[in-house]
Structure formats: structure tokens, C-alpha cells
Image 1 (tube, rainbow, N blue to C red):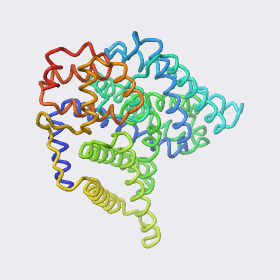
Image 2: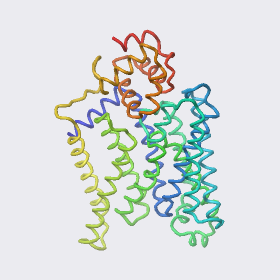
Image 3: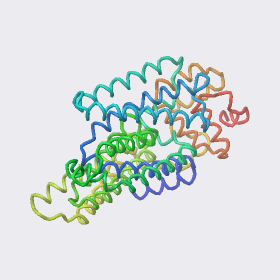
Image 4: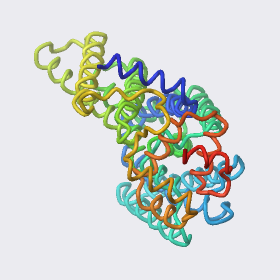
Length: 412
């Protein structure tokens, strides 16, 4: 079953370029988040990561309010970059405020995080409510969706991922010593204040990178789980970075494969659950090792056992939730859909009658409908250019942008 699932995933990537875009962006995000997760675990910055992640909603809403012309998001490169830049600046400012208030002993760190977390989310909700209609992208920002990633997002993600990893490589020693022991870092002449703010900045930029794949509500897990799982498998810090990246990549691939085989499952939460399974397996192995093999790390054996067990769980879970007899081809013939017939008929009828208000309202309140329709559009037997036009119009809810010829093909 697992071989069939991976084969179908490879076929879908070949048939649907945008799924490949999502995979490339997810791999770049995995490398950055998994590397930073070791610092987060060592320094116990998990709650700060949660606060910065939730503050991204405020930055996204501010960017949409400032730079989006019209009632819906205009999916152009300039608009997307402006929203991302606004989100990044907002997250960095919130991160610095959390760091400043906690290090100056104005209030405790946990209180500071809690205050700025809820204030940022409330600020975002208020700004979103100022718009007459919600946008489909806001749901992907909250919950994550690999289907929301375009080619420009891939380029932007990979460039920023390279910059973040380069910064980590250049300043690795001071950041590592600071996360390991602040007093040791001071004794070695490291300016712990600037290093702390630099680490918060890197975390904020990483969260902006990851928000489309994992969502505001789930990204903090990716900044904790790989490092925590690696800590269970080894005591050597250098090896910990390698294992964290293995866990991150396995979680990405496992989550995407499951969400591809089972189209009803959203990609972001599925990726996080895959990483959680890896963490539980690493925890069980560490407990077994410490109880029956005390004093021995056995890192290669432990990693092999965890990966093997993860593949078994992945195969069992996919088989359990896949309806009997379902084969789900990579690109389905015309007339067959991966969504419920009623939903697909509703979508086609709304386009035919130009009842855009009803369609927009459904998109605003039903993220599952958004993801299912998006996946079905990607599977239509149409030229790539026409599919991309449909997807762009759907993401921007710019229905007049769909050519009449394409509409006729949809109805046929």
C-alpha cells in the first residue's frame, strides 16, 4: 500500500506542476525549520515561536488591507511580495517587543508572549473584519495548504531559505553557545543581547516563509517537533541537527503523500501529525533504550527503527482510511471528480449563472470546499496554461478572468 501511495504521489507531481511547487517550497521550509528547531529546543523558545507565529495573522491582515486593491487578493508578484514583506516586518517587531520586555524584566517572558500573542491575533481579526469579504487565501494562511503555493512563492521561499541558512551557518557558534548556556556565551565574549534578537529575527522570517504550507496555527509545531525528536535519539549536538532535518523531511513527505492519497485531508495538519508520529516513535525508542540499554546512544539503530516504524504506521493509516476498491488515478478523466458531486455541481452552477456572491460566501466559510475544488481544478484534463488561469481566478476569486472557452470545457 505504501509503495502504491508513493507511486501515485510521484505521478501526481508529474501531472500537476503546482503540486511540485508545493513540494519544493515544503522541502525548503523543512530545512530551515528543522535546523532552527534544535536552537528552539535547547534555548526553550517554543512558546516564543508560538507567539510569533500567531502574530503573523496580524501582519497578513495588515498587508492585505494596505496593498490589496479591490475586494479580493490580487495574485500578482508585487502584491504577494508586499503582503509577505509586511507580514515579515510585523512579526519581527512583535518578536523584538517580546524579547525587549522580557529581557528588561518589565514583565515575565511567558506573560509578554501571552499578551502580544492575543493582541496580534485580535488586531488581525479586526483588520480582516474591515473588508467586506474574506479571501480564500486567509484560510490557507490559518491552516496551511500546499495547493496555495505558486511558482513565485517557491522562488521566494527558496531564496529566503538560503539566506536564513547562510545566516545560521555564519553565526552558528555564537547562536549555539547562547542557546546552550547564556553564561558560557558571556564568558566567551559573545554579545548575548544582539544574538538573542538575531535569533528572534530569524525565527520571524522563517515563520513568514512557512505560513502558506503549515498555517499560522500549526507552524510552531514545526519549530519544536524535529528538534525534540532529535534530542530523544542522540546526545550529540552536531548529530542532532542532522536527525532533526531527517525528521522534518520525513514529516513533509509523509504528510504530503497522505493528503494526496486522501484528498479530504488538508496538507498542513497532515504534515504536523506525521511529525508528531515521528516524535512519539522517537520517545518510545528513547524510553526503551534508557530502560534496557542504559548508557548507550545507539543513534543509527534508533533512527532506523523510528523510520521503519513510521513507514509501517503510514502504510497502515493510509490503508485504514482509504475506501475499499479505491484506486484514484493521478489525472482523472473528464466527468470524474475528487470532490462530492454536490459541491462540484454547486461550483459549476455558480459559474454558469454568475452567482458569484453565493460562491464567494461558500469559499469564505468552508476551507475544505476551497481545498477540494482547488485539487479538482488541478486534476482536470486541460492544458497547463488553462488550468493555471483557472487556479489564479479561483485563488483571487476573480471569476470574470476565466475565458468563456474554458468555462464551456468545464460544463461539458
